[in-house]
Image (cartoon, rainbow over all chains, first blue to last red; front, side, top):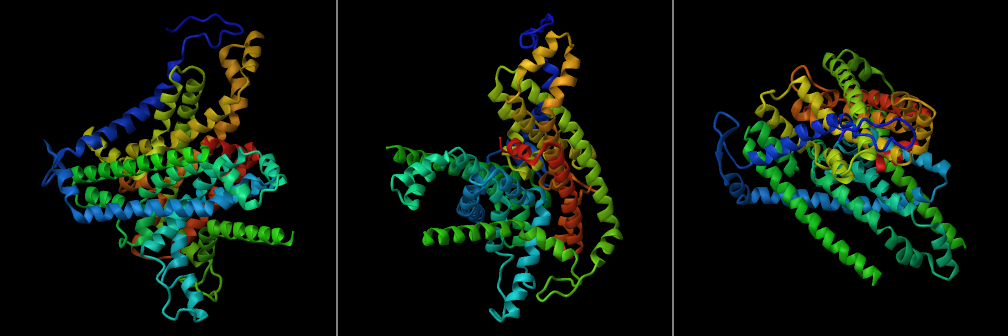
Length: 295
Length: 268
């Protein structure tokens, strides 16, 4: 396998494969990523202990009790709804941004990219704090609203689902824009010009040419944002103020505060399964949409 | 014609508003850090540096700041080396490229908070204990390596191998070839990857949440703990310092390799 390799042109590819290059990264991902997740799934089938976090007795009890609990179903529903709404709004807001970015001159594009990526480079905790300053009961927006007498009692913008949604849409918007602009960039502008010169209105050009050709980007972007949004933790805690409990919050609470690892593991697995089910449904819908367009 | 111009104006206004939405919380954090009062109100209460003074005198914030900086630096060194090596292997030598690629970027696909929980439970199982420095460092390495891997893979795909073969045929050894030809060409990808890795580690929240403990508190965790129980503009001062560091790192990268490579590298 490891050949002695003669030196000279053209022999680079034929020499033995340098395993040592891949071993460290592979070891890290297998030992500290794959194994821990396997262990987490295994944990969900163990019995919760009284003094210790778990006892090594196999059981299905964690699943039956989680699935029989109406409260947990309700939390799961709220989590998936948050994921769905975040995806919808990032798509609606991200599309114009992505179109503008894809059609910008390379000079402007650099500047727009800085604007687009800069929020991505500031930690999620700091960005949530920014929204807290804006949305709090005695925050900036309410102080403006009260100053002008628009709503004397102020608006309830935070510590509810609205505040959480504002936060998640803000955090995941750049991801959506990057996915969309990648696809939009691959559409030759000539195509739009050709359609226009043949008499198509701009609305028609958009719905018949740009939109269908950008579907792969929409597909990828929605998938990415949904997966990220259903598992977000910081935003629901800080902008929901423990009034908007989502499944990730419940999982952490069960594991850390209640110290019940098997139940937490089962809740995590159920969240994964539910997101997978949503993604599967979404794939089927998308497939049908694509086929409908090509027909 | 006039209708089209109007439509265009409306569209550009919408774009400007959306960018405003994107940068709003960041601008607000900076404004709040310079604000005299406890809350940012309209009309503004005046300027003050009191929150920065409070920050400098707060031992937990200063300590966690330097801890995060050291942790991010160490994480970046490790991930840059192992991520670059893995990228070289996968692009040039691997038989099952797609499988390896998927495995190596898997930590980006699964939610950080779940990875954090899985690692916490795993550390107990192997007897490492929940909140050690090594455990925290490994967690950061796991989620940061994919960034380096992806950016280096992106440049390697556009690499003209004949340059290396020319060097080899002119008598350069494999180490010389790597140092003088390969490394300078893939430099952009490696630096972008390192920058992503540094920022991801420095701002890392979910991984640190469950894995950091007494003595290993990172800055984002410190800020989070603070904000969970009280609303204090000292957090805004921390945030502003954080933003300035990120800005400095990004500008340096822009100088070194250009931002486009950050964008394309990160998009892959």
